[in-house]
Image (tube, rainbow, N blue to C red; front, side):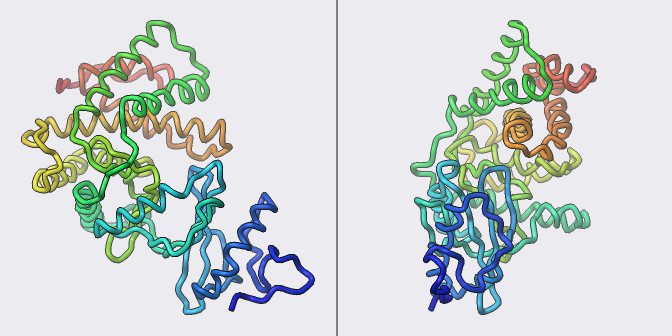
Length: 368
């Protein structure tokens, strides 16, 4: 039976003995939550007195952890509509599980109100494990992540997922001038600089759209992978799309929160390339027979992502009151600079970012 409610309290009040460790800025949402979770306590064997914050992310979602009466634990996703929509998360979670990969099982959900009860994959992030790992341990973990990614690309059903099309790629790129250039640095581009940016966008979008298309997680990075059996556990997949095959490997190799030496990036990229070829996900694209072409495509796709993230992290600071993300802007400028200096078609980007980074070396080996 659900925990009994004191007679003097309204039916939407927290259950007797329920945790008060969770802050609710909106009393109406708190009441809705207790109406939803209280009947589940009996069915799922939950001890509501243990409810506590688990984590938050860059969106408006947050996660709570609640212990089971058997000593296990569950995760509650609190995703307030209309700011968040839990339906894509639930849909993609089921697709990932159907592909034989490790996503949290959806145990109960109120899609209209944005509450989801999930299996708990634990609290050990891949990111933390990699930061503390020996080189051999890090190599093993990254190889596991690469193998799981190829399985994701080969087996996750992409039917009906949003398409990573020209319009979406360009909307993402527009975040860079709108939020990073203009808002973070207060720079207004001249007409000539705007034209240079437009040409760069055309180059990056054309490269992305020419690639084979697969299910794309869209944030396949160590912070969204968990140390769980079987490894890795997969999180934060609700924005999955049908799009360029190199997007997720670029996300893994050039991460938002941890960087690798380039020879190590290339080693893992080559392992992904070999497995992706064998799995047939590269199709007849030139990269299927030429790792050099594959590496170029990874770098160009990564640049699109890094410019987008420079905009997103600036937006998190200025619009959403989350300034901590801006501390990683230099990492993404470094990624962008490395790629722009390497390829003749991308080198005009240097002139656009130098006012924000200071003078950059303009002599580099051009691969194209």
